[in-house]
Image (tube, rainbow, N blue to C red; front, top):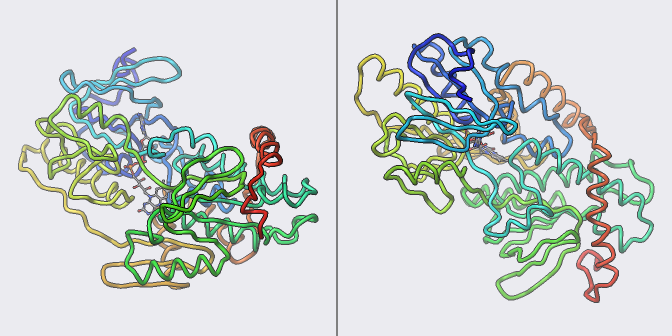
Length: 459
Ligand SMILES: Cc1cc2nc3c(=O)[nH]c(=O)nc-3n(C[C@H](O)[C@H](O)[C@H](O)COP(=O)(O)OP(=O)(O)OC[C@H]3O[C@@H](n4cnc5c(N)ncnc54)[C@H](O)[C@@H]3O)c2cc1C
């Protein structure tokens, strides 16, 4: 089927196809709202996802709807834009056509300009078998899966009379101490010490153990030294067991094998493991590289010209996490600004201005929150920590959350979670409980037969 022939095309004009409605794609689409173009945005999800708050969905603070408004709702008033649901599987640069699949049906979409904003997924550094035991944190599916595992683990702990068998249910291991890992570990610690207090009768939820594993020698590696130290200290104050120089060598249903300082092997028995360690750019990058003179970096990101276009293909832009330009970081602000840059370049060209303008990134700062009232931020040379940084974090995230209704809903949930003690979004499905417990059952039997002393039983 050719989507352009479906009869629901906007009025004829320059055809801009945008792959992905994340920060890069959505900001590009919006920046084209007054341009004489017809925009088609194709995404495999029906929602725009605010990834920086995924960990709050996983830990019961926010609902999935708060951070994932439907793309077509966001663009409902933009009459030169339409939204199609589908997974882009091929781009033909010579024919200027994109192929995408929706529920087994292949469609083709011709373009005059193409913006590829397909982002990045999780990398398990060649150990994809870890994924089944330690989900990543990239999509709504991941966050809901983790929510099921986290709250399901506490339920299982309540049912387990044997302390040795209960411990792995109350041990939560986060792999990777970048911003996502730090935020997750902090939130799980706060959840167990604060939110779940007095909820269980056979154990004290504050006994839950949160372990943060990092192969490097520091947490929050890209941040300046004082902020890293502060984040490390805050995590330890929350009771997180931070282990640096620790590599994960194996993951199974019952726990993880580790290697500390390159020589000390260890094992942590834990039913809930979370992978927050690496990223791998969308496979669409390799498809573009096969047909053009561009190269990919180690994470699969596409090297682009200074104006974010593919070499020899000025009509194709690559933006956001999929783009490799001047070693810019994979952050939301880069994606938004590069998406807008691509849109403005297309608009300028249509007015006859073919001059090349390089993309200039304006760094507005970086921040990470560790728990309630604890955050670290740096904006240019300004370094901020503690409650001031936390309030800044709150304000910035509210400002960038898409849609007024989502901001209201998130504010209400934050009031409940941060000023009060509760977290409203703790619903898990029976299906999740069953999947989690079946996976763990096998490992419980293995644990009983294991002659090694599990670390979690040595407390
Ligand atoms: C857990 C987490 C926390 C983060 N925290 C922060 C933070 O605090 N601050 C910060 O600045 N950045 C943060 N980031 C990074 C930030 O979210 C990314 O840099 C940003 O989302 C990149 O935008 P993008 O548009 O390039 O890609 P994405 O936002 O990933 O969007 C890609 C879109 O493309 C779609 N897509 C992918 N492949 C296909 C395909 N084949 N066909 C159709 N559609 C496709 C996806 O469904 C998605 O909608 C975080 C990321 C994660 C995962």
